[in-house]
Length: 314
View (cartoon, helix red, strand yellow):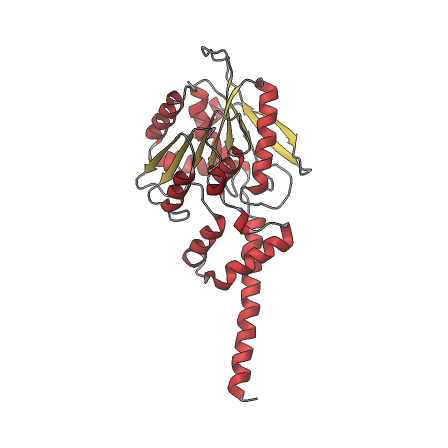
């Protein structure tokens, strides 16, 4: 065999082995991310200007407990109750379930919860599997997390009444979780998704070269294979936009940063187009990923309040 052929074969084998190693490492990083401690998250929220430490210490009074996931681990959960039960004309409790993003924890949702809290809502927050103080299990970018959200919502209805007016708000991976869950929960009063993705497989096709400086092929295909082998799921199953086609029963607000370089604006547009029934969108100019609240806190409050009033939640 000519030397050149041997060299090419060796290079091809080396490239294949390197691709397998890289794909495994990226898949592992997604499945088992480095997560931030509670104090670190509060410090980061303060740094971003979402609130001050003084405000947090003086106003946020959480009642913490655990729920049991259907998958067998504990979900660290907290409620931020109203000091006094708000009075609504229909005498029903208002409940917002807040869903945090990838590698964060429930305290990252306090900025959004503060809006609901002032509007008379009881707020329920929890840590995803493999995040915060919840039990360890592979992160599935919203797929199994949406089942845990269903568990939290079921608990909230038992706590606040089966007729409680209950809605969800999620950020980033939490937004994907909210969209996937919305299809299954026919009693949801509203849902808000902030900077979620429409299709995780396509997101990785976009992110691998841009963020990791890696070729999408063959890394993406190998990652998908490793997800199937390790967790029994394909990246192609993570398509919140598909779930939205069966969500005519719930009004939804879509929020996205106009300068989001991680999850591009066209993904929000794809989700919005797919959503059946009542829907609204708000594109926050110059906001980066998960940055819309910081970029325009008053605008966030106004848009969310107007959305809730329009759909008779307030």
